[in-house]
Structure formats: C-alpha cells, structure tokens
Image (cartoon, rainbow, N blue to C red; front, side, top):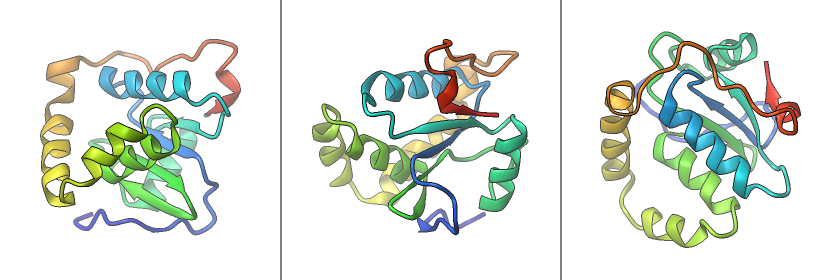
Length: 143
C-alpha cells in the first residue's frame, strides 16, 4: 500500500492494535501500552496470528513484511507514526510527548518511522515466537 493515511475502520472495533509479534521493539511497545493503559482501552493482535493475518489482509498490510503497525480508534484505522501518536494521545502521562511529536509534519515522522521499521530486527532483535502476555493480560490479546 502506498497511502498510509487514516481511513474508516469499516466495522473494526476501537482499541485494537495490530503489531509484529516477533519484533522485540514492537513487543516492547505493546508492554509500554499495557503498563499505561489502566482502563484497558486497547487490545492487541499479533500479525502472525490467524486473526492478525486476516486483519492485515483487510488493511492492505503485508503479513510477510509488515511496513506498519495499525490501531483502530475513533472509528478510523491509523498507520505508521499516526498509529503511535493516536495511542499516545489516549494514554495519560504520554500526552505531552504526543503533542510534541504531533507538531512534526507527518511525512517527516513517517520517514523516521520507516527507517526504524526497516531496521527493527537488526537493531532491536527478533524472537522466534510471538510475545506471550502474562496471564493477567492474556484476555487483551486476540489470537
């Protein structure tokens, strides 16, 4: 997909985050959100799961080489840096960080996002299996 602008969610439930489950950086992002999302507004689905593959296909994201994460919020699907900023905008203490980043033009934010995404396995590592949530958080993960 060439245009990663937000678009209507077409029935996908708000609060769903699609992430690369074998990416160490992406799993850290999920843990960051879990720790700060005290109201449990977000649920997670790894792109490597059956539900994640189906969602990725509906959103035009490659399962083999995902170029973006995605979040459904406010009836829309958000991608790349917009996805991260959307999540941060919901999380209390992270709102200040979000406001500073939001002032940066999207093409510049997405260029940085793309650079990290292309090199995420080399820089942060890759695991052989998807992130396994602790039992208290397992209900927030869709398989």
